Image 1 (spheres, rainbow, N blue to C red):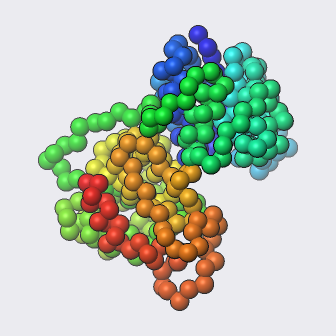
Image 2 (cartoon, rainbow, N blue to C red; image 1 turned 30 degrees about the vertical axis):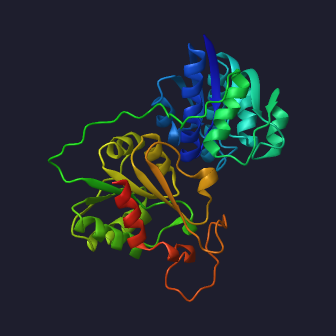
Image 3 (cartoon, rainbow, N blue to C red; image 1 turned 90 degrees about the horizontal axis):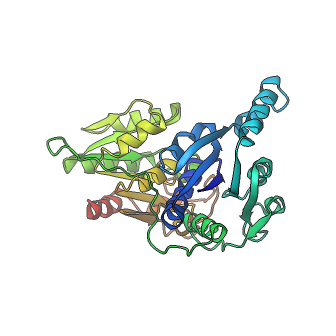
Amino acid sequence: MQRILVVKTSSMGDVIHALPALTDAGRMLNPIQFDWVVEENFKEIPMWHPLVERIIPVALRRWRKAPFAAATRQEWKQFRQALRLQHYDYVIDAQGLVKSAIVTRLADGERCGYDWQSAREPLASCLYQRRIRVSKQQHAVTRVRELFARVLGYELPTDLPDYGIANPIALDPSQKPIILFIHGTTWASKLWPQAYWIALAQLANQQGYQVQLPWGNSVEQQRATEIASQCEDAVILPRLNLSELRDKLLSVKAAVAVDTGLGHMAAALAVPTLSLYGPTDPQKVGTLGKAQQQLAMSFGCVPCRQTTCHYQSDATISPACYQDKPPLIVWEKLREML
């Protein structure tokens, strides 16, 4: 049986993007088994895939805050020891960054990754033994699937990605159907205006849907509170871990999301999801999978790929690019999916 080490440390969306490649490999090369190096905050996600046997958590984000602390040095030593416990047929860096390439270099196995022209950080390719050229003009999920196919020697599948983690549950027909609003994200420019969320929630309530609002920090909690306060039937969820969020997603009728990792989780779980894109390009980083729809803004400056909106406008809506997709248009698109 082949044993492969996957290096894909973060972020949530990036980790989820790598899952279909494992499903492809399992179908083409059974038996095969994977271990996975991933940031400690996302270690639950790879374990949901049936072909992942062992997680090796890494804390690069935390360690770099205190690189010379005794605790950091001790944890780094333990991580390196864990990384060397197993010999691998292949060590595949699916991240393409210098930090992930360094981790790949420490493992025991043939080191594989993107070549100079394909890696997100070209210098990373210098640390691989096999360098694979994969076009950047593809969706991120397809890039990882192609990387694995080229390394492991099978034909790249052309079907929709199967993330290998969807486990649908039967919804209770006696309960009011739920629409989950995935409103939080890291970039200010990706945030759909709060007034729009309120208006969309009111439209959903009028049609008999309950709105539920997850949150992950105090800012998101405050936004959820303000949305719910102006709606007839909106529930603010308690703070949930990743596994609890997965279970919640599997219990809803549909989701509306901005460009964020939880939206990609919804796609991986085949939850009908309408995702809203302003500064980013859904053709390369959008949700991909069964029952997924993307609504990209058609404003003149998109995709700007800027974390903050700098567009000068007299309009009251910010970020400005969301002006052309107000709540009624989003609701009509969502209703088609429902």
